[in-house]
Image (tube, rainbow, N blue to C red; front, side):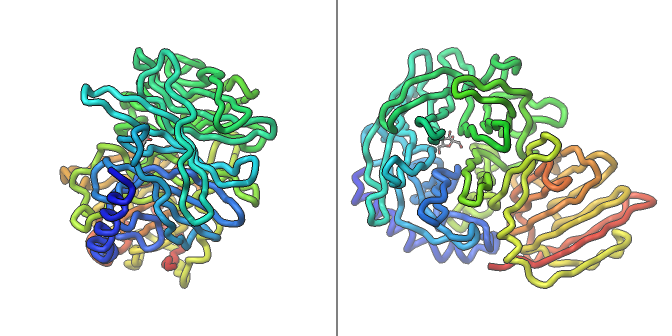
Length: 467
Ligand code: FRU
C-alpha cells in the first residue's frame, strides 16, 4: 500500500476506534497499549537526547497479525507516554509483509537510527527477510534508508529482529534465525558502520553450548552486559513442556555467560517470566546506568482469538517497565522505581487470610509477606496459591473456561503484585522470578484470601495506583 493511502486508513481507524478502545473497562490505566489495533513486541527501546523512546509492533488497521509497522511513544519518566507520529509503515517491496521487530541506536553523529526487519512473503508460502535502516528526519518521522543486509547462506527466510549496539570500538548486532534444517539460533554480526555488516557466526542456539535440541527458531535476541557478565535474552520456539517448565506455546528466557566480542560461553536456559503472557522483551541501558526492560504481555497465536478487548477494537499491552539486576548470580527483575510515584494512600493488613478486607485491585500495588499456605483471589478468575517452596498462578481461561496453572519456585521472600485492569504482574522473592498474565475480571474486582491450614498468615501493604 502507498504511504498516503496507509495514513488515510490509519486516520480513519483512529477516528472510528479510539474512543471505543479508551472506553473499554479492560483498558490499562497506566500500562502502554496501542490506541487501536494490535500491539506486539517492544521495539527500538532507547534513551536518546533526554527522552525514552519506545516503539512497538503495531497493526493500526485491525487486531490481526497483519500490516505491521512501528508505533512510537516517548516519555521522560517511563510512566507518562506521548504518542508520536507512526515511525514505520510497510510501504516498500523489501518490507511488503511487515516492518518487523528491531532496535534503535544513536549513530556516529548522534542521530536516532532504527534497524528493523523487512519481511517479505511469497505466494508459495516461502519468505525472505532484509535488515533495514531508517533515520530520524528531524520532524518526528523516520526516513527509510533501505536494506543493508540480506539472508546469510544456510538459513531460511526466518532471520529477523536485529538488536544492535556499539561496544566502543565497532557496531555489533544479534539476529534471531532458523537454519534450513530447522534449528533456532542467534547470529552475531559486526560492522564498522551501520550499513556494512559481516557475519561472525552463531553464538547460541539449538544444539549449541550444551543446550541439546532447543527449538526450530529463536526470536528477538538481546545480548548485553550486566555487571561483569553478559546476558542473552531470546525467545525459542518449538520446545515441549517439561514438568512445570516451558508451559507456554513459545518460550522466553535468559542465558548468562562471558562474551569476548566473538563467542558467548554460556550456561543453562532459564525462563524470564513463568506466567501465561510474556514474550519478545527488549532492554536498553539508560543514562543512570540501569538495564531496563519492556516485554509484550502477549504471545503470538495463543489466547488471542477471543480476548474480550477485541470487541473494543484493540488487543495486547506492554509489561510495566522493569529493571534488571543480579542477586546471588541470578537474573532478577523489579518494577522501575519511578512507578512508586503512582502510589496513592497505603493500607496495611496483618493477620489471618480469612480476615483480609476486600481491597480494590482495579489498579494496585501489593507487597506481600505470606506464611504457611493459602490462596489469594484476584476477582473471581485468578488465584495465587502459596505453599512451601512454590507459588502457583491459576487462572480461568477466557477462551475455554478451564482453569490452568503456571508456577514458580519460591524461597518464602517478599512478593510484589502489580494489577492494572486486565493485567497482573507478580515479582517473587524480590524479583528472582516473575509471573505475568492478562485476566479479565468483572467490574471493581477485589482481593480475597483463604487459609490453607495452621500458621496461614498475610502481611500486606496495598496502594491504589493512578497516573
Ligand atoms: C515476535 C515476532 C518477531 C517478529 C514480530 C512480527 O513476537 O514474531 O519475531 O519480528 O513478532 O510482528
